[in-house]
Image (cartoon, rainbow over all chains, first blue to last red):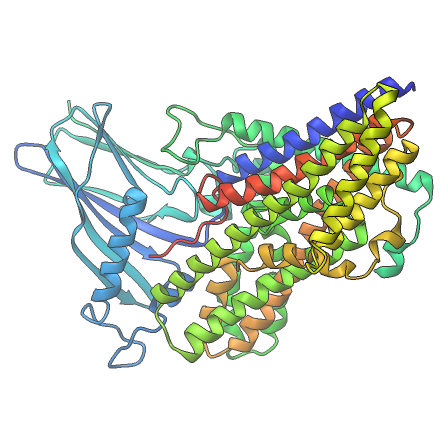
Amino acid sequence: MGILTRRLVGMVLLAAALASGVLGIGSRAAQAHPHVWITATSELLYTEDGAITGVRHAWTFDDMFSTYALQGIESKTKGVYSHEELAALAQTNVESLKEFGYFTFAKADGKKQKFLEPTDYFLEYRDGLLTLHFTLPLKTPVKSRELALEVFDPTFFVDFKYADKDPVKLVGAPAACQASFQRPNDGTASAQTLGEQNFMSGENSNFGAMFANKIAVACP
Amino acid sequence: MKRVFGRVAPRGFARGLMFCALALATVLMLDAVVHVLLAQTPFGGARPGAEPQASGIVGWLLAKQSEFYREMSATIRSAKSDGSAVWTLLAISFAYGIFHAAGPGHGKAVISSYLVANQETARRGVVLSFASALMQSLVAVLVVGIFAWLLNATAKTMCGAERVIEIASYALIAAFGARLVWVKGGGFMRALQAQQPIPATAMATHSHAHEHQHAHKHGHDPDHHDHGQHHHDHHHEHDEHGGHSHGPVPSELAGPGGWRRGFGAIVAVGLRPCSGAILVLVFALAQGLFWAGVAATFVMGLGTAITVTAIALMALSAKDLARRLSGARDGGGALFMRGVEFGAAGLVLLFGVGLLFGYLAAERVTCF
């Protein structure tokens, strides 16, 4: 190899190495991994005339995070926490969640909807797990033919998995409205489905929007 | 370890190793490109309509480590009644550490860039990676030990402390990068000047560089960081005289204060504890098994160190290969390598600033 050729090859290699470094960092940003697991159920609240007013979430944290969150919280009886004893923590929770848009993203007929700050929030402690209940009111109640609601953490620090039983309920919705629910199609939200087969097809390992739990309501 | 990395590997072996490193780098690069093209933006919401099918290896690693992590809480619980479960816990923690470090953060990028910028040896790369991972574990144990165990502070307070530490760490990385850029930028400019083809000015340029080096030496002598610079100038001087790029001679690196040089990198990277370790420690504390959590944290750090080391060594081999291929026959090769070091220094600065201002989401500390 001549000197020129060698230098050329060297430069290409280096550019490739640097590019992989930079791109690698950029892409890893979207590939954080969860430290908090939430099992969720959601109720979509409707008025009598068929407008959606908000969403009522119940999020149960995994035992590691539940224990972490309870650190330093005093209770009268050991291992039993009343709603009152957890009130301050619940408030911290909903206040902190604001920064992340409550991990809830709504669109009515394709138009993005805004939420107000949560109401009726409290924490419940049962069997070592904390469940955060809160209602997320829509800024303006809206009647729409198609409503799309997504629940996920875009940075994937939190892994949302909807409950197996009754994940989504419509409350007071017109009888004609039909709800459908789609779980994220990646295997990481449900690690038990992980296997060599779907790993090879690459279907279990996509990151980003595919963590989204998608709720759709069609009202003709 | 000392013996293995101190010995000069046979040529064929070295070449084979580099080929492997190169192949791996290529795979990672392709993987990264795919991710960048397909993944949603980290700043906004989801990219509409995109249903990315991310590639296997990294995705699999991350899915795997989630699995290990979730097994940890159950294992700590059972360790309360069954002491042998601690061994299971340690095994899981070790595996978790290895897989976990494949995710963002943990200083892989910063350490790798630093090693490339500062012409460090593989041996030093190993030591830096292990030391920074150990320090991350130590900080996690200290944070939980002080805030949760001694003060019985709430998670909110602890998380606030974590955030402060995080910002300090990022600021340190940025400052560290800025210093590297300053030093390596100087080396690059001088190599550029030495490259001037007119023979009449070559001598003038040379003597100028010489003076410059002297001024630096005297100006910063009390600062121990100067050793890095000293070494660099020395090496650079070599290039100018003979027009060769020899690469660092081991004896040069073992100079006085040699090991202290990497101290800044260890502190900057190691200061920031892993959120996962903090959660595990608090959980273990609540189960009355703090010591098991501490042991798990350090074993986790060991696993992390192995992954970080592998990536750091890969970066070093890539640089070495680039240096060989770029041809050490004339000054061009030296200039090229100065440029590489300058670029790597720039990357460290970029990481620090990016992390500090949240453009690069490392493992974010989430308080809620």
